[in-house]
Every structure is written in structure tokens, then in C-alpha cells.
Length: 373
Ligand SMILES: NC(=O)c1ccc[n+]([C@@H]2O[C@H](COP(=O)([O-])OP(=O)(O)OC[C@H]3O[C@@H](n4cnc5c(N)ncnc54)[C@H](O)[C@@H]3O)[C@@H](O)[C@H]2O)c1
Image (tube, rainbow, N blue to C red):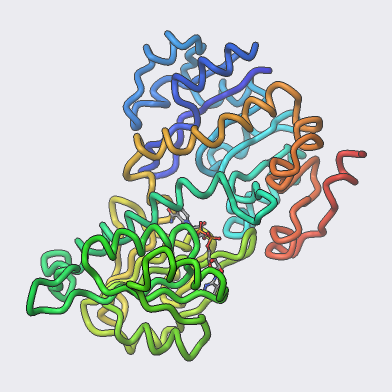
């Protein structure tokens, strides 16, 4: 199969969908790989490395889309790329369609096969292609938050770990999944006091055990959220309902009740955000804005700031699926791998993911019906 790796065009996105080592494996599998020139630049991979790995270097993105059948990307196609999409394409990338309904319409109209990394799901409910990015974003949330709490960045001038005789910062994390766990790990490591809220008692028990009871845990509801938000120095939004828009858990009123100079990092902004005053997506170059004296950080592609780590982490988990899709074709690949089948969001004009369909108000058609199995 001809696999295309376009350069990412989203603002500040420096990751690339396939490393030179990945290209080599795809080529060994009998495939042709087209890589747009400079696609790996941001992650520190030169065109020469891709050429040596066996890729065909292509000048512009349009040509990659035009010649390749399987498009491997990092972020969702942007409006500038909509015209390149056709009914022969299998697009394998992060899509987060609940937050971009117009893209869902484009993919449906063009009858492309759109597989979202973030909805590929294992039997145990885990999301293996979201995990490495979530691990990075969770770690970064505390790293970035610690910096924003410094006075020079507009924060209240609190050192996250405190010092002997002065208490540390209070880090409150909404959602104790992969992002939440990674954030808790780093925050505890920096000496902060950590509170995690989740709707799952099982998750909270696992976290309590994992960190030997060194954090506070609450079942998440309006009452506990309201209480925790008030004492937070750093509030991290890390909730997820797979495929659906993030639930709005923190109201504007609650944000008003926060101390001046505190900071909100809403990692779940890529799914629409879990905080009422997070009403826009920010970028790495303009990452924050102020609302009610509270610093708001809403970067939807946080791992984009550490593109080299992120690219290796991402391709470690996407490559096996990419190989499967290229080798068997989308139909056989999805029929043979239930996990991969969960990634199907739109196939030949039909929405095949129940949560995505619900979030977008689209008609849900079960995948086997579309595949004709
Ligand atoms: N901004 C970025 O760059 C970036 C990067 C990676 C992941 N993310 C996003 O971060 C979010 C979290 O991802 P994850 O991998 O940790 O997901 P996850 O599924 O591992 O964890 C989500 C947790 O949220 C909990 N939850 C659901 N509803 C809740 C509620 N009402 N109150 C409290 N907890 C609730 C779930 O029980 C679960 O434990 C997702 O939206 C994901 O897309 C963003």
C-alpha cells in the first residue's frame, strides 16, 4: 500500500506520524512510504534520515494526499487539507471529532475511512493510542503549572513543593485516569499536596494504593468539586468520557471562588474542556489567558511542545496498527482486530462510533453493517 506522511500544519505542532525507524519497518513490510519534505524537522528527523530509511520524499502536502491511500497523521485534518480528502483515503490520526463537527461532515461527505487514535480501545477499556500522549500531557500539566504559579508568569508566587516551614501548593486533579495519574506522580514528586477526584471509586482506590495514601481522593460530584476548587493553587482538568464531549464540571461561579493568581490547566480541552471558563483553545505561543484573576491554560496539543519524546512515544504504539492496516487493508484489518475496529469513526459516509455519533447528533451505524460482514 502507499502510505503518506504529510507534514503537520496545526499551529505549533512539531510531531510527525512516523519516525525513520517506522518507515523502515513499513518498507520491510512491502509498502511504499511517501514523506513530505521537512515533515520530521520539528521532531529532529532530517529528510536524509527518511531517505536512508527508504521513504520517497515529496515536496508538498497535497501531493502526499493525492498519491497515498493510507494517510498517517498526528492531528486532525485542518480546513486547508479538506479539499485533499477523497473516498479512497484511510486516515489514521487523532481526530477528536466531538470538538470539530465540521470535520465529521467533511469526512462523511467525502466518504473517507477515518480511524481515530483516541477511540481505539482494548477490552479492559484502556485507550492504548491515547495513553502515551496522556502520560506526557499529565506530566507537562504540573511542569507548566509550576512555572505559571511563579510571579513572573502572573501566578500567585507559590513554589509548588514549598520549603521546610512553608506548606507546598495544593494541586487538584479532576479525573484520575492516565493524565491524572501522571500529573499526580509528578506533583507528588515535586512535593505538592495532591487531591484527585474521580467518579470511579475503583480508580481512586488504585491511586490511593499506588501512591501509598500520599494523596487525598474524593468521589467527584458538584459538592466535592466545589470544595476542592476553592483550595486549589493548581487545578488540572483530566476527565474523559471516550468519544464524547468532556463534561463541564467546574462552573464559572466556582472559578470566581478560586484564589487570585491560581492556575487552571484543562488538559481535556481537546474534548471540549471540563471548565466553564475554558471557552477557547490556546496555543503554545499564546498558552494562557486571565479570567476572574485565574490563569487559564488550554493548549489542546500539549505534547507538541516535546515533539521528539512525543513522536517516539506515539509511533511506538501506532506502528503495529499502521502495519496491520497497510498489510490487510482497512476492512480485513478491522475485522481481525477488535481493538483497531474501535477506532473507526466514519466509514464510507457512516458514523460507526456510538459516542461520536451521540456527541455530534449523527445517525449511528454499527461497523459490521458498513463492512458488510
Ligand atoms: N491537551 C492535550 O494535549 C491532551 C493530551 C493527552 C490527552 N488529553 C485529554 O486528556 C483527557 C484525559 O485523558 P486520559 O487519558 O487521562 O483519560 P482516561 O480515560 O485515562 O481518564 C479519564 C478519567 O476521567 C474520569 N471521569 C469521567 N467523568 C468524570 C467526572 N465527572 N469527574 C471526575 N472524573 C471523571 C474517568 O473515570 C477516568 O478515570 C482526555 O480528554 C484526553 O483527550 C489532552
